[in-house]
Length: 295
View (tube, rainbow, N blue to C red):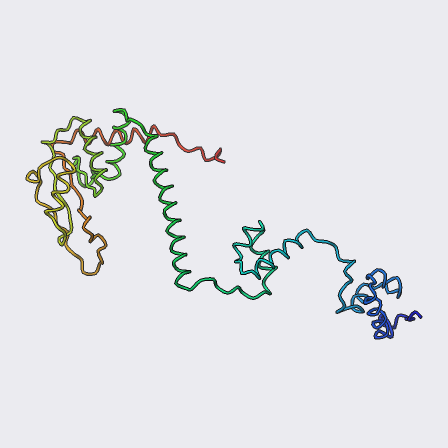
């Protein structure tokens, strides 16, 4: 027999508990919400849902979901002790989905000791760094090979840019107009000397000295730079020693620290003017960036 009902003053159905009893019974018999609605003539969705609250829908009403199989497989793998990353790689889904599907399952027992885990992590990091080093070396080698041979003009321009970045410049308040260069990189020093050769500057016009911290090995540094530039140590001027500031912490204390080499070109006022003029010529010749058409 059907349960009768009628709206009350406030729009709510009377005998709610009786209706709920009947709705639950229908639900357990396998009725869908639409069938319960039609059977009990309950056309208010809110009340209909309240009547069957807590009762799971029958299996036949559930729509198949594309990810159901993935979810079940993820749960199986998690129970076998797989990690999130392993499950993600195996199933090709996102880690967030894996986490959602298996978060109620217990964490798998670790398959190795903390020491073994650290060893694996260190081995993985070492492999990663080795790959990065190989990529870094390959990139540098390809870039170096792409340069090829430099023409005299290209070397001249490179030397002018190098000097303007690292060399001593003339100031309005201090007119020196002399080529003086200081650097700690042997390759930079070699390129600067090659540039001077292009400008027909002979070695007898050079005054060289080492600038280094007072606590370093001055003799070893002078021998190092003498080998780099192909001059005898006896031709070096007295080294400039940098005083130690007790408030600073020196980081250049390794055996590889050789200080800087200072190269002074005597009678170089004309060369300095040519260099400065060439620098401004480079600046003027370089096209301005087209900011409006940049994509």
